[in-house]
Amino acid sequence: MIAEKTGATRFMLFASLIAALFLLSGCTAMGVGQGAPFFDYTYLMYPLLAGILILALAFMFSKIFNLQHWTAIISDELVQVLATGLVALCLFGMQVGVDGYLVNAFTAATPTGTVPACAGHIGCANDIAYAQLSTTGVETLLNDLHDAGSLIGTEASKGIYCSMLGVGFTLTNCSQLNAFRGSLTSSSFATMAGVLDIYAQQFLLTLAKNFSFTLIIPLGLFFRCFKLSRQAGGALIAIGFGLYTAYPLAIIAGSSLLTGYATPIMTEPAPLAPNALKLTDHCDPYEMHSDVSRKQFDDYASQLTDPNIALSTTYLVICKVILMSILALIITLGFIRMLAHLLGSEIDVSSLARIS
Image 1 (cartoon, helix red, strand yellow):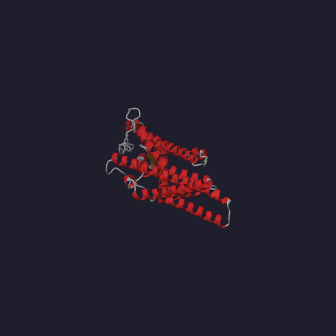
Image 2 (cartoon, helix red, strand yellow; image 1 turned 30 degrees about the horizontal axis):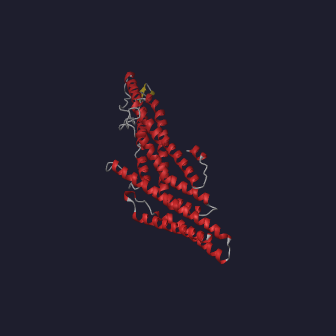
Image 3 (cartoon, one colour; image 1 turned 90 degrees about the vertical axis):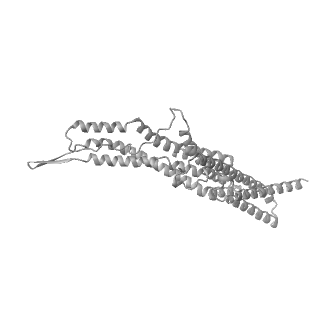
């Protein structure tokens, strides 16, 4: 009786796994609304089928060579393959649900024609995060700072050459404008760091979009089917799913956190007007009155220290780009560690968190 119950249990487990695989294949073929998978989710079936094939071969060898102690081991591994199939089905359902909801919300809330061209077709949460990073405006700020610094250098280098009784000397009546070049250079360095940060985040999003559900997660599912590599498989699944799902969601949530309030204190600073950092008046090196040059210097100093310009540049570079990227990475690493723990693996992300 016990043997019959054990055989029936194994048969039910195997039948459940096959049904889950067919369900996964059917959902992939049908798609789910506008949030249909960006790529072929049948990649999740291949490692499970490979695991079943290996266990079937091991079962045949155990019968051929009369290795009875292999039967219990194969039965335990078959249960783990079933659990791995359920994990794959859960990952598939969660990703399709998240993509479908966010794509529909983004499409309804975004006016037609405002999606940046570099973002391409918006088909998943990864695309939405990429589009939001593309519209931060930090590259425009860097170009404005570069143009302002170049114009200051051109104006400050203006001078006149005088020659009297064979003696020549040069007067640089505009050199006082060089005082602003140090601040503009420092601002350009900080903004360049923000631009590189944006490029790094977009690289991670592209890497996750192309390889998470096609290589990293399928490889993790295959490793998780067997006891010797189960912890490595759980770690790979957590890394792939964290980068593909948690990381874009953290970027989207961070952007909404900064711009979603309507109170005067938390309102997002207005973007800089075109040419807001440039010198408005050209310096005349033939001007003999020092009061005119001093007024031009004071006016440009007041322009740069205007609260709107200072708040907008600081908010954009420090808060919206650098701090939000660090927060998104910390959230993603925490999610990866939690998911890996649920899958029976442990990942030490403390050193990576310090790097972020």
